Length: 192
Image (tube, rainbow, N blue to C red; front, side, top):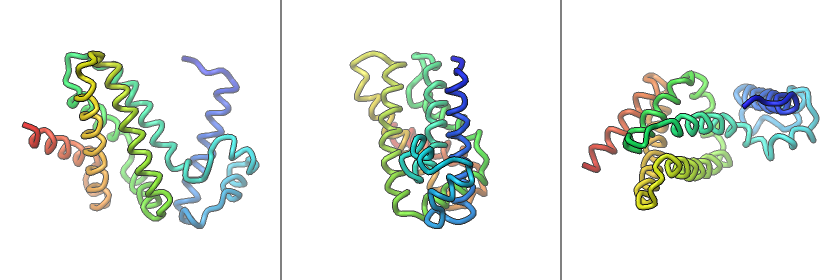
């Protein structure tokens, strides 16, 4: 789907604000960065900021939105003959492999430094689980599979959380995809 000029400008402005906010968070810390500083650096007014984001913590969660949109699009292309857990595993590993470790480590550090962001991150995981479940139901449409698909969504987001936590604790020495692969292997071994 091709975006109109207005939608393209809005998307570019949102991305510019998000990138500016992230740059300032990394330089000054989350608490040390004000909305006014983000707006000024992005070349917008404070009021315009609120046309794109509800709060400054929304900036850090934007990169996750894009990742989940891409993952959803990938999952919708999966054959229903594949097992849901394997499809999610492959899609998640493929998705996280696209991101630079240094960038992900920096974002993770900023998010862990703020209690507000830690709470928002937990809420984002719940939303991701629900979005994943909805997507799985679009691929595997049989109503009798709903509970199993809900379990796959829960386990998959849980495996992702454990993998990201383990990866962050070792400060990016190994790619996050390796931790994700291990987490899913542990899940499969435990349910056999």
